[in-house]
Image (tube, rainbow, N blue to C red; front, top):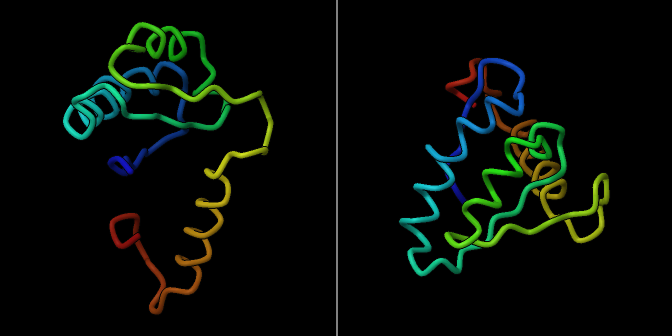
Length: 102
């Protein structure tokens, strides 16, 4: 697991590109300094942006990046994790009222 990053707007490819070096790269270099860390993402449009893919290719020696077939749910646990997280949030009492409470 890595850091949770709260965005105030819709994620774009360029915004995602600004997140990768600041959060992903620093996290992976600390936690997986041996270069054996594995990064998984779904194929959301910002994740599949050319600038993001290029950055991941340029840093392929720092950590591994799983490649998923576009729009393929097979073996992708991100959706299951997202569903479990949403279920846990919905069952919170009292429910979160602000993004910071969340």
